[in-house]
Image (cartoon, rainbow, N blue to C red; front, side):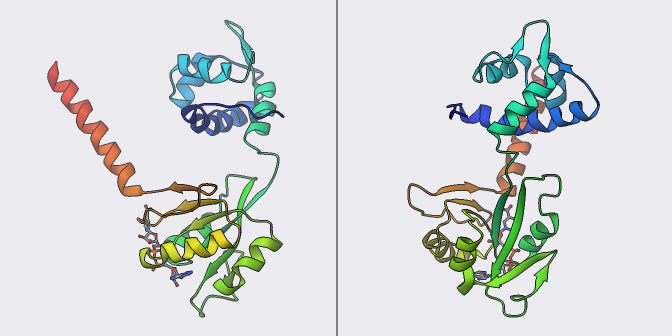
Length: 215
Ligand code: NAD
């Protein structure tokens, strides 16, 4: 499939659409309207139509979208028909929770190996995932052709670990540490921060309240 250039906001919404389409398909529904999708995924229907328009004529106005067609299409775009193995570096409180979760609702992503420096856990299997010593990083990533890693080490070790991961060939890092990592331009870093997410939620609730009191 040709690479389609789509806005970031659209790309973020694709997994939402995809998950809902799976549910519809399992329920045996053949068609879905943008209004129906809109209610289910909480995205306004104009944005949905615009998002879908980036992928060409996938639906007809007033007729709805064909669920199976959309599913096949999104599956390809989201690479859902290939399994992506990812590594987890730092098997502490957060790392173990993620290992235990291990993307159970996805058939296409899994943490297949974990790394730590703590000799008490290296060489063991936790939640079905082998935990290796950091000295095995390069070899394992190359053997398993892994290019994405989840980073859950203490802040003090974050940059050094990032350098090691980059040297070992990692191209995408999901960074749970509070450190803003420096990495080469061809390495993507996605920062995950629960405090920021909560802060955003608090901001929206406060501004909703302010709007209500304006009336
Ligand atoms: P933790 O201390 O329980 O676990 C850290 C693990 O990393 C330990 O197993 C330790 O042995 C290992 N480690 C230390 N140095 C290492 C190195 N050089 N290479 C490989 N492994 C190494 O910490 P935690 O509570 O699990 O938190 C982990 C990170 O996640 C911290 O940076 C914390 O600030 C962050 N965190 C982020 C969020 C968020 O919302 N983004 C939430 C909680 C924690």
